Structures are given as structure tokens and as C-alpha cells.
Image 1 (cartoon, rainbow over the protein chains, first blue to last red):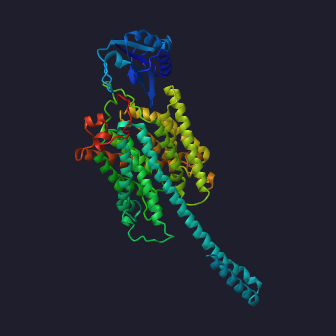
Image 2: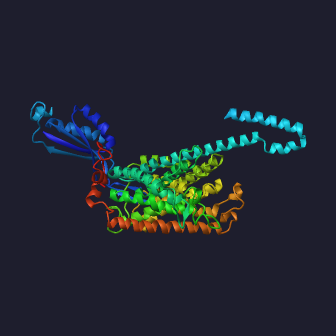
Image 3: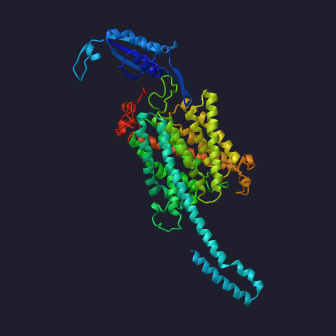
Length: 113
Length: 468
């Protein structure tokens, strides 16, 4: 079991959801996040004072999958989230020790579903 | 009433007929001059005009009251979400406490019969009854909302770091003493009083209160912000000003539109007369606001590279504050020039106060009300064109050949307002600082005054996404 964490441009979320659905990956959780990386933020000015905004708005996508779904999921995300510009985001893949479905008490492969 | 006039007309006709038969036609001319019909019509006209004046003044007072909502929205929008409840409470309480203080003490100091340098009688309008033709209650409500406007200016400059208790003390002082005493010098003669500024050879010109209301509020705001010190994180270790963006520019814009709307009561209402001058003053007021917004936008675009919304909104207010003194006595073209100058002035004043004086004024209250109020008052001495407008025998403004007399008086008034409000403000806020304490705890300021002072959030159920 793996936990896939992807940081995406917020405006790519809809496309990524569609691509994942096509790849038969239908379970995910999404949160707003702030972050900085190669994009280095942008300039804002307020009442004549300039300031840098270097934490940019991103969305964080978490998907727990069984081994055979890892590549499909990653490919689906990359297929639509990649523009070639700085700021497209990153994907992290972590080993997942256990997964338990609260409703039934199922564990492991069955729980991820 | 109609029946009354008709019967008078009938008896008048009989009198005329008898006179014509008895004495002869040449006496008739004299008799017509005191014609009871004309007298009755005149009396009816006079009563009608009096009622119209009262209705217009009340409507204007209600419009000015609505400016409280404008101030609340502007100040809440230009500050952070974690202090929104606090700023709304300050706006509510400075008007409520101010109303009572002005009713009990302030009004009499401002408009009571003059004793030395202040008025002193008619406390709480004791003795004024329910006379339908009377003027006193109308005048009181009109003046109360003006006092409330002066009081509410200060809250924005002291936003995000002031103890609520300290702010309540301030609210009592301004409406009971500071505002009314200066007001009595310039406006006391509108009622029973009379002060030195309005009795100068070239009487002080401040039609609706650029100085009396706005500068007084603005200079008190400056004193408050100085004694209080800047918000945490406003100035970096190198002393450079940092931006602390307001949390809701939508609300701030709504607030500015409400203020603009309220100003149609503030300026045209100060005629307290229902006639065509209402329209003329509405035009000068509107033109100045528009010019202020346009020029502030252009300046922020040229100097700051982007048309800054908060500066443009401040520009509209700057134009409104500046035209408040000269709205009655300048031409429409003059109003555009005054508004335009105020629009540029407010931009550079905000930058100057932020970066050079290093006084933290989150909403620009000192620049909008203090600086542009002083400029607007000065502009009477430059742009007054009473003769051109047909409302006076001579033009008072320097640019219209009026010489320096009016300008001198205006400078005296501006100086007196600064010394009075800023000096007394420094004293008052220092006394509050050493007695009840002026500044909120550091922890409370970081967490937000909403939680610390009022135990509630403005946006419960919303995730506030901010690291400031």
C-alpha cells in the first residue's frame, strides 16, 4: 500500500479529478495549502508598500492506493497537471503501514478498496 | 388652514369694497400694501418653508448617521479579520457613548450662550418642549450626528492594538469636551453661542466641517496612533514599513460608497434650508469626490505602478473631506480642482506618515481627515467665489482677487484646530495610558483583539487563511 501526496496548481484540480476518474481512481482527499518552491512567489503592493508573497496557494491531494494502482495514478496526475512551467507541483509516494475502514473494521487491501 | 385663508380673503374683499366706495380709488394702493390676503399667504409660505427646512435637516441628519455604517465597513475592511469585531464595537460605542455625552454636556458647550471661550447653558436641552415649529430638537440631532462623525474617525487609526476600555474613555472625552469646545469657536453662532473664529473680520469659513469635524478627528487620531505605537510587525528591524493588507476590500469599497452617499446629507444638509442650494452643494461635493478618486488612482498608478484600490477609495474620501468646508462658497470648477489636489495629497500623505513619521495608521484616517481637512479649510481662502456665485458682495478667495484676509483666518482656524486637538489628544491619550492602559497585551494582539477583548470571532465557521 502506498500513500500518494501531490501538490498541484489549484486551477488544475478539476482536470486531475477527471483524469483520475478515467484511470479508475475514485477516492481522494483534497486540502488547501500554502507553499513555496521554484516559483519564488510574486509581488503585491498595498497602500504604496510593496511586499513579496512567497507562499503560494496550492492544493494538496492525498490518495491511498494498492501497489498495482501506483503507476496509473501518477500517470493520470502528470498527464494533465504538467504544463512545463515552473510551479506545476510535486508528487511524493510513501509506504503506507496500515489502513482501516472505520465503518466495517476491514484492514489493508480491502479497506483501501 | 385652507378654510381659514378663504374666509380671510372674503372679509378682506368686503373691507376693500367699502373703502373703495367711501374714500375713493387713490387710497386703494395703500390698502393693498397691507392686504390681509397677502399677509396670510406670506404666513402660510413662511410656515411651509420652516417645515421644509426642518424636514430637510432631519433627512440630512439621518444620512449623516448612516455614515457610521460607512466608517465601520471601511475600517473593518482595511484591517485584519482577527480584529473585525473589535473595530465594529468601537464604531458602535463611539457613536452611542458620544451621543449621550454630546446630549448631556457637549451640545451646551458648543451652542449655549457664550461665556468666555465656551458656551454654557441649556444642558440636555432642558426647557425645550414639543413645539412643532421649534428648531432646537432638529438642530440637536443634526449636530449629534456630526459629533459622532468626528468621534468615529479615530478608531481606524488606532485599529488592531488598542484596549477597548481605553477607547471607551476616549469616546466620552471627545464628544463631551474636545469636539464641542472647538466647535463653539467656529459654529457657536449657528444657535445661541458665538466664538472667536466666526467673529473675526473675515469670518472663519468652514461650511460643513472640514476642520470642525474632520481635522479635529484626524489630529486626535494622529495623537492616538503616536501614543499607542505601531502594530506588531508593521516595521521591520531596519525600520522599514511593511504592508499589513486589509482583509476585505469589498467591505471597504461598500463603506466608501456609503460615506459618499452620507456626504449628500453632510454638505448639502448644512444649509439647513430647503431650496435650490441643496442641489448646487450636492454637485460641488460629488465633483470633488470624483476628482479625488481619479487623481488618487492616477498617482498610485504612476508612482506605485498599479492602480491601488485602497488608495483610490481613500482618494474619494479625501475629495469629500476637502470640499466639506468650501462646498457652499466655491464654483463647480473650483470643486474639481480642490478634489484633485486632495486626491494627490492623500496618497503622498499616507506614504509620508507611514515611512517618514513612522506612525502606523492602518486606514489612512490622519491623511484623509486631518491633512485633507486642513487643506479643504485652506482652500476656502484660495477658491472662495461668493460674488461669482451671487451669494455675497465680494470674493473671499485669493485666486478670485479676494486678497489674504480670508486665507489668514483660515490659517488661524487650521492652526487652532491642530494645537487644540493634537495637543489635547496627546495629553488625553497619555493620561489614559498611565491610568487604565492604552495598549492591548502582546499575546492578545497576536491572537487578535476579537478573541482577547470580546471573546468572539467575526467569521466563526470560516477558515482564516493568513499567517499575519
